[in-house]
Image (cartoon, rainbow, N blue to C red; front, side, top):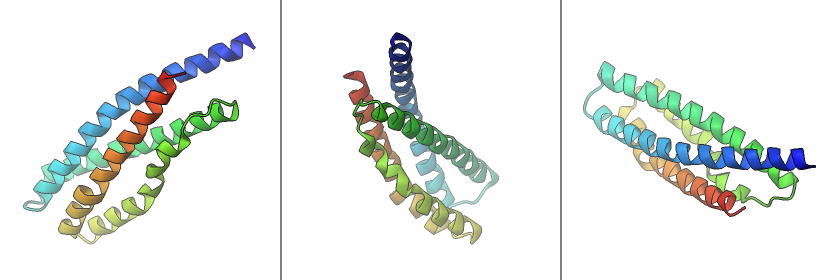
Length: 142
């Protein structure tokens, strides 16, 4: 039992630290996307597309992290820790947004893609960061 308690404590510590780091990254990724969207409205240069590609890769890594974090929260909640799993719900709607962004990119509809980034993706990232903050606070109170 002591080994399991130590493993849970290590998991909570790792989750809290990683959430802190990811919250910083979300802010950076969000700002980079908004900057790219603003440029995309006026120019479609290789640099803009490279920046967008990098942002999309970062977004993919972020979503993989969120899935792993959800599994960790589920695991701890099965053990009775009562972490707020609703703080991660906003990420569930992201798949539809990503499909819309992909469609706009394929059809070269730069205005729509820029709008999706500015008015839907950026607020999603902000809401997601807020949810991570709540989860981090809950973990810190354990």
